[in-house]
Image (cartoon, rainbow, N blue to C red):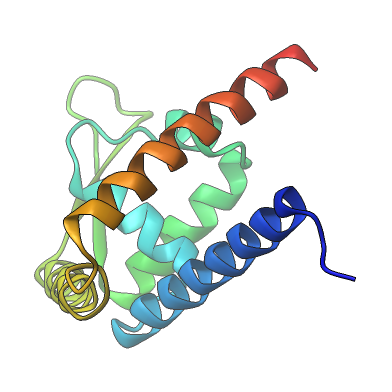
Length: 146
């Protein structure tokens, strides 16, 4: 018996989510990182990185973020200095090695976009985007009610 359309759609979404997760792990590994390290390195690349805020946004512990920052520092991807206005805070900067890793990830990601996403029709991409946004809104609203 065929599953109903809703359950088939859920299975497809799970498969897509797993494919994205696998690809993120591959991209990170190609740059010598774990996926968690990549996420932190990407945040450090931005402006005004605060480990505690990052931890709250990702619903992970500050200790886990600190551990990842230490790993990135040990690998030479990130360096830290004492904050000038507050000696208790550290400022994190991506090193040249970290920048090369991020560049490698971004290039590989763009290659994948070209190889996979760009091959889809504009009509299919528009329909997918519309459905994805609609579904995300419904799931977020449903979760907020719980």
